[in-house]
Image (cartoon, helix red, strand yellow):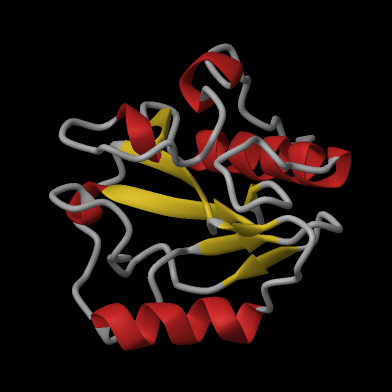
Length: 146
């Protein structure tokens, strides 16, 4: 695994699994290992809102071709409806968990842009199946009490 050089982007993804079928942490990990030889993402947000850390922030993920060296990857369970079509399938628990995680990351990386996978050049996917750039544009960092 390669070290992460700098964090310019916080990239939100969907796991692209059907929302009516669970996609276990083990399945996500194994998919990355089979395709790329390692875990792909830094965090996994489950349908119930659990945030599962997968990779250290100091290690490159393999989630955005050409941008792995400068980005952290966050993936949520779902992204396909019951018919297998791309759709924003986030639960309320996932929406709240994503906001909490992204606010904490913005506190650590205040200059990092929050984007969806689809917002990067040459990406021809709907991932994460919602407009992450617009939704999180004015997201404020988490302020810790002194």
